Image (spheres, rainbow, N blue to C red):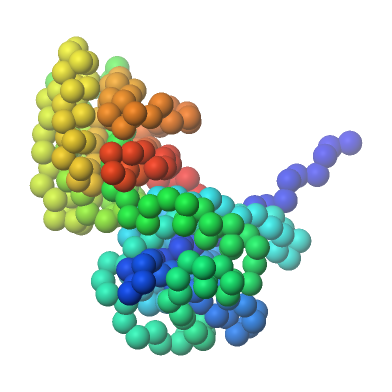
Length: 299
């Protein structure tokens, strides 16, 4: 007898939205009259929507607050209407000073509370666990994003200069999606291999955020001096700025290892990046505080 298929997983995302308060960090809690609870802003992914975009959208819709995602926190899992549900959370900083809250169809109240008071107000134990994880680390972090170039067809079928090989149609779509996803972490410096496929991968993001693309020949695939490439990425990281670096399968491990070595941390666990995939290393005070890996078609 054929076994029954696994239950469809409901994906959702939200955030612990924080802002400086008179007595320290405050977090935003929402009250939902329909459920009679106090919780964090969150909601289900729309069809084809990436969880990063869901987190940004749901916070905006429920609180009116535009936010930038910081370090990933964790996820909660529970059953909803007979189906398993997973909600992923991030720390999220307000892009601008919070304004007066306007009630909406989903949320009737929003309050900014200190960590201890928020823990007492939350209705669910899994929310208190998320809050504890937020409180255990830095609220503010700096993202270093290491992205592998998007799809660029077959190397064996390209007769021209390898550095000039362009993105294909799929790669162009991936680069547009990457612009939206990487913008969830705010604006950043953009450094790219000189290869056309790398430049084109980060061009939409650079246009969206107003960044200038800095070309780095040491990150090109034909660059044999890996020691110099590692030293260069370490020097870029030393400036402590949010940074996007676009490179290739051949040198991605070298660059990732150099970044982790600078932070005194081991390489993060995870599969090698697929085309259009990216690592986010969240740093605070020369420490690696969290990592995550994503790709445009994750959802």
